[in-house]
Image 1 (cartoon, rainbow, N blue to C red):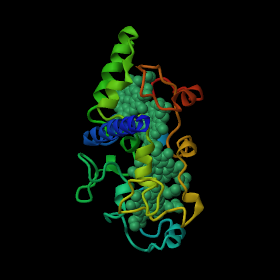
Image 2: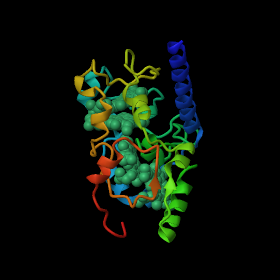
Image 3: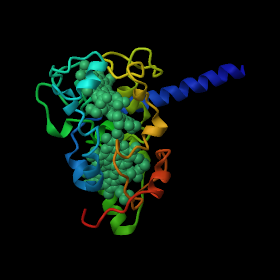
Image 4: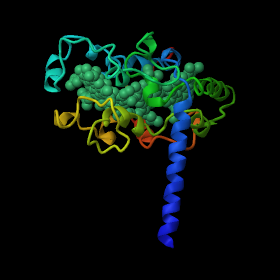
Length: 235
Ligand code: HEC
Ligand code: HEC
Ligand code: HEC
Ligand code: HEC
């Protein structure tokens, strides 16, 4: 009896999780231009990351040794290969996302929306919340952003690229797979809790005024904010 009840609860929780995620997946991508114009310090810092330069790696004669080790042809141009670009750009195969036929610069590389979620529905709320806060100090709930597709957990998104290979511990893996697996080299082992703290791969963190409030809050949010940098004024 107790077990049955517990199973029901787990099933309900899973349903909420997966339906929440598919809701997020329905929101359209639009590229990082708008995000970057309001969040300049993060955008500047992100530019120097491997994520920002991910399309470069698909060009011929780049990262030759890594490609050889993974049985890829280093002389080949993979920048228009549908088995590759999906994890090296924003929103491939999704509404508003990157396409091979008409590639957009603001969706090239692994940008803001690949981690934070497709932005068209939620970024207007950032502007409104910022204005309300400036006027009267009023805080706005993160919950409303999450219902419009902003991601405060990240892990599923990272896994869809980093843990998408045959025999992966991530249960949703399906082709096209990443060629860079722990079997090729142990350094490709994905450890979320460690890697999400790597500011050289995400971006540096900057102090927020605290416009947004409540759950869902990222599990390391307070830790990141406690160590965050202060952005220069006018930046
Ligand atoms: C019109 C300006 C504007 C745009 C466009 C914008 N934001 Fe924001 N964003 C804000 C403001 C204002 C805040 C609140 C900052 C604070 O608390 O100091 C914020 C907060 C955030 C936060 C912190 C949320 C939290 O948990 O407290 C993240 C992450 C973020 N934005 C990402 C993005 C991304 C990604 C995009 C593009 C899809 C984007 N923003 C577009 C103005 C904007
Ligand atoms: C859209 C696919 C995608 C998503 C989502 C994604 N990554 Fe990545 N990540 C990549 C690719 C591709 C590279 C390699 C870029 C290159 O060198 O060309 C990379 C590189 C990295 C690196 C650098 C590895 C090194 O060699 O230094 C770290 C760390 C990392 N990702 C962590 C994360 C974390 C944590 C998340 C989630 C918060 C995440 N990634 C989300 C595709 C993705
Ligand atoms: C399922 C997602 C996915 C697909 C598909 C994918 N990649 Fe990647 N790629 C990644 C991730 C994640 C990394 C970062 C691995 C790391 O450093 O831990 C990466 C890294 C790379 C790197 C840099 C490796 C290094 O050691 O610096 C190259 C080069 C690369 N990919 C080329 C390709 C090519 C070519 C294809 C198509 C044949 C491809 N990728 C398909 C996810 C993917
Ligand atoms: C590889 C994943 C990844 C990418 C790409 C990424 N971010 Fe973030 N970002 C994070 C994580 C993780 C946090 C920490 C969230 C928290 O503390 O609540 C974060 C936090 C933020 C915050 C909150 C304040 C801060 O500095 O911590 C803002 C604003 C933000 N990101 C904007 C952006 C913008 C703009 C871009 C694109 C130019 C971007 N991010 C690209 C992972 C990413």
